[in-house]
Picture 1 (tube, rainbow over the protein chains, first blue to last red):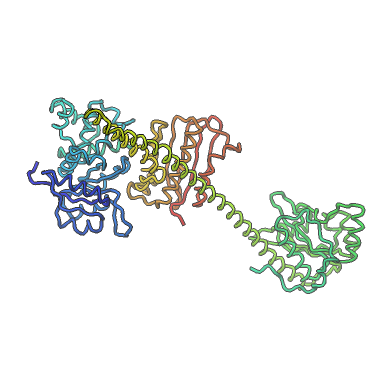
Picture 2: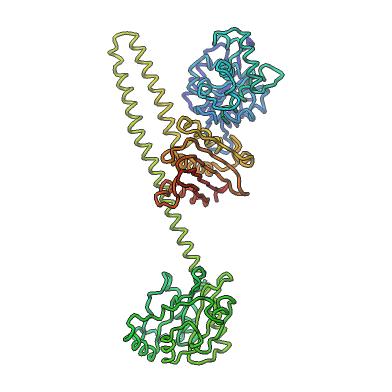
Length: 222
Length: 417
């Protein structure tokens, strides 16, 4: 992990929430808020010059003008202009359907419920994970993911626990600590999960992203 | 489109005291239009009597629709005599099949004008009416088909004393029949329009009623449940100053927080979803998957999507207009609601497909107890589906039988016009 603080831009049309988020991030040494905006046209015009590592975007960005975009559209537009930009989507919708399909559109994205923002650990994990190229899903969203049938039903309860933590942006070390098991065991479990979900990849972080997307798809179509 | 033939040439014959109107028994609802045609035709052609017959092809029967009034003094006297013996005798009760004789086949099947030399040869008139006609000297008929869209829908018969129908009067009679055809077509279009308007009004009323019902339910929900829960929280909070120690205060705050979270997460979200399912933004199938996940503990919903429909309803970038998605979603919600209320089903299946260039289809199937669709009460739960579907000129039908399964098929246009 780098010592440089992560440069973060915020786009949120609810004034109170935007201010609170800016304050919370500003107090943390790992983060540096480089700008906050209330609408997409202004954000699109000014954010590229700020060279952020991450943007936090309200998925429900309002606005009635033809140029206004929602959070997903704005994220895609910004990623075209800023290399390796991570997008953290903020949402009130605890609904997998808002997340489905995002993997095909956006890279380096995460989905966080607004109510989870007050939990600093969750916030930090999402921001750092996204900056490292992972896909991080909100813990409450993951808790609601009930695999019914299909490939996921072949996973053991323990393997499923590990997969859920991967989806929340935990590292293998973090998973080991959280479940109270050896790091080596986590590595083995992870490999079995990848095989079951048919994940083949050249890098560890890429494999994690693929596993999360496969997990998401399996839950939805189950 | 004008329905009035050339100016009447003998207005003095219209005086009411010399007119015996034909009994209206056999007249249809739109008889006034036909009556006008008959009277105008009589005036223009100066013949003794004009009748309009309507062909009911379904019943294979030709019936009198209307006739010109009978002005002739002799005719009136003859009619009075007959009615002394047969008080209910009615000249409009005549009916015959369209193939009753050669002349009839020529008129109704070939669409050509014929002359019946004498009424005795008409083969459909009762002896009594023939006698009546003879009494007043009306015995020769010209019969002209009235053709709408290539189909003979009616005929006009012109009966007079003279056996000779000049070419000129023939042409006039035929052009009159054309005018009658236009009038008839117009009347049919009007009736169709009226029918459509009535249906539209009906469906709009049902849609409005459904909206009102939803609003009332949400109002009751907010006023009842949400308000009560908020009052409870308020009540708990007002205990705070009286709390004896730090532990009970922390506990109280936690309880209040949990309760507020429950209100926000469950109640507010639920009410908001009923008002507008925001996930519809992501696509119709997405909204239905979301619906399925919310009711999966009540009944599992399996969703099948054809490749053609997947291309159309791309997640987050659906090519279906949001209005259309919303209507389809409400219909599906309603159909599943019906299933939950009545069907005792153990599973529901949704199938989405594109059926034509401009139409898509949703099939909602359940394995419940089914019902007999021909029973009147069976349709009740479908009124709101019907209203929504018809409002956008879609179509739908239900397929069921006692012991099930039940299948509701809805077809909607890809775009609203």
